Image (cartoon, rainbow, N blue to C red; front, side, top):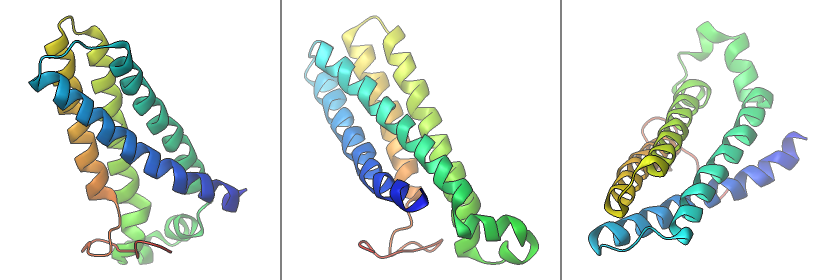
Length: 152
């Protein structure tokens, strides 16, 4: 099960990033060009949040099954000294969860706004903040916290 989910996790992570970037693009365009918040914009907002929630569920399942995480919690005093282990066991998980919470709050707030401009502005701000946090939580090859190659 673990190996099968890692495949879907790989696809979902890119879908989250792509849908967030597309949502931000739509919000930017709508806000600065005074477009109407269309049904398509609402669907983009909704599906971005939905994809992120699916990714969160898959991530939580993988988190609980990961050998790195199991080792970390069984050998906490030793593992906390290892920055790579601490990154994946704590930092990555907390930041990604925080990003999804912000994305969810932003998505929910958009539904409650009345004017098109307010909807686009709310979506733009909240989704950009979520995307920045996601980018911080990614173990880039150049990251000082933990790194992985672009392609494994």
